[in-house]
Length: 347
Ligand code: PEP
Ligand code: MN
Image (cartoon, rainbow, N blue to C red; front, side):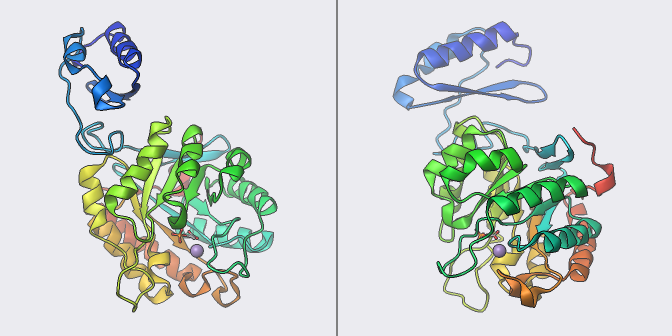
């Protein structure tokens, strides 16, 4: 739309797009409003849209992902995680964020202990799995609802929003009441029903990259969430399967600048699951930030040898704290900043 287009013109264009049978998505920038008309190309009468009052130009987006693309939204999206009893933590643009905590919630005590460690170390969002996607059905599967409630109470007490993996459409309704951010695991990146279901909520979604998904496929998954009206997608590079077996997964550092060019969505890296081993976690986290990530998600445990899940890759609290100091330095080269817990305002 023209920079000075009045609301009536914007409403008219939205109405016309809907009349054609497409969906209209508004993106209000600093200077202008962009209206995304998403639907089959054949039903969209471009000439008619171009002739409407206030329309500056009609630009077909050729990419298969539309709402996730830079063409639709020029500026970096900043997604706010939290609100209510816990602070709102911005992720994206100049705001870097660190999500940390245990792989899985094993009991109430360990959760509080780790949460205190990561908060004191500089993390602003707490992670912790309550439903675990395990390769073996005989491995620890997570404690479910009980652990979800501990996560909520612990986040509230620590002043940290919580990020928890949702594995199934049947879990969305209950989890929505507790979590500040849904995590979609790598194995569920193309669970389209699940993507649509979290897309219907208005809670941010941390979308992990599938183990063998291309960046384009990953963006198409983000599009599923966005197309349901949920704007809060945070992309997470967590390593992909390659022939290399010296490390658990190959963290695709290249996907970070590619995503930053193709999309306005924030991208964070998960060095823990890529590394599979704590010795490599810090280097991968720093490399991700140097490549232009908007933050990291890291697993931490005070007694990794007793962890029920992913112990070998968990950082000790001390090491995590040291890593945060280094991450702040690297973030500065992209003019990004990790907020200090104290400076975040509540909703
Ligand atoms: C996790 O974050 O604990 C996890 C299972 O991650 P991913 O889906 O990336 O394997
Ligand atoms: Mn894990």
